[in-house]
Amino acid sequence: MRDPEDLSATLTTLPDWDTLNAYEMTKRCCAELTKRGQRLPSWTSIREIIGKGSANDINRGKEDFRREHGDGLRKMSGFVKGVPDALAPHILGVWTAAISLVREEFNGQVADWQAQIERAEAAVAHAETERDQATSRAAALQGQNAGLQEAIASLQGRVDTERAAREQAERMFESNRHELAGQRDELRAALVHSQQELSAAITRLEGVEKHALMEIARARTDAQDRIASVEARAKRESGDLSMEIARVSGQLHDLRAQLASATQQTASMRERLQRAEEQADHLASENARLVAALQGAVTGARPALRGKYASIKKRRTGRRGID
Image 1 (tube, one colour):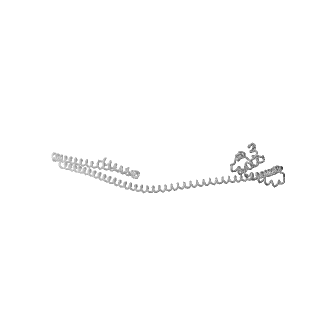
Image 2 (spheres, one colour):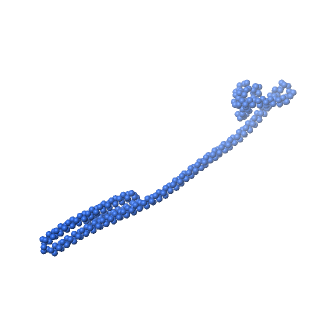
Image 3 (cartoon, one colour):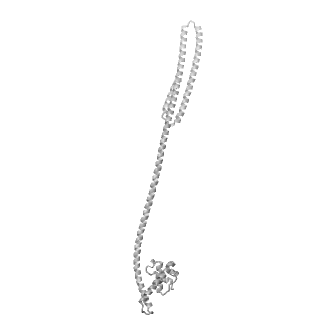
C-alpha cells in the first residue's frame, strides 16, 4: 500500500469529508484504494488513514463496500456481454469513472443540502439557545419568585413573632399595671395610716403642752394669790410688826417651800414635756422612715407634712420663749 498520509490527504479533499462518520469514511477509503488498484487493508490500517472509527464500524464499511462493488461489477457484466475480455476492464473503468462523476455531483448537491441542513440546524440551535435562555430566565424568575415566597414567609414569621411578643408585652403590661395599682393602693393606705399616726402624735403633744402651760399658770396664780394675801394681811396687822414678821417669815418659808414644790412640779412637767417631745421626734423619725420606704408615692405629701411639723416646732419654740 502507498503512503497512508498521501491517501489520507486525498480523502480529506473529498466533499463533506469532515461531516462523514467512520462507516462512510471507510467506504470512501475503500473506493479510493480500489481506484488505485490496491487491496483493502486491515481495519486498524483504515482507522490510521481516516483517523477514527471502531472495529465494528470499519469492518462493516469494508463488507458493505465489497458487497456494493460486487453488485456493481455484476451489473456491468450485462452491459459488456459479447465484449472481449480484454476490453471489459476498460469499459468497467469508464463506467466506474462515470459513476464517480455522478457521485461527485451528487455529493456536491449533498454538500449544498448539508449546508442548508447546517443552516437549519444553526437556526434550530439558535432557537434552542434562545429557548434555553428563556428557560434559564424562567428558572431564574422562578428562583426569584421562590426567594420572594421564602422572604414573604420569613417576614410573615417575623410578623407573627412580633405580634406574639407584642401580645405577651401587653399581657405583662396589664399584669404590671394591676400590680402597680395594688402597690399604689397599699402605699396610699400606708401613707394615710402614717398621717393618722402623725396627727395623733401631734394631738397628744399639743395636749401635753397645753396641760403643762395650764399647770404653770395655775402655780403662778396660786403663788401670786398667796403673796397678795400675805401682803394684805401684813398691812392689816402692822401694829404687831415683830410677831407678824415672824409669822410672815414662817409663812414666807412655807410659801418658798410651796414655790420650790411648784418649781419641782414645773420641772417634772417640763421633763414630761421633753419626753413628749422625744416621743414626737421618735414618731417623726419613724414617719420619715416610712415616707422613705414609700418613695415616690409620698413625695407629694412630704412638703405638707414638713410644713405642719415646722409650724408645730415654731409654736413649741414660741411657747418655750414665753416660759
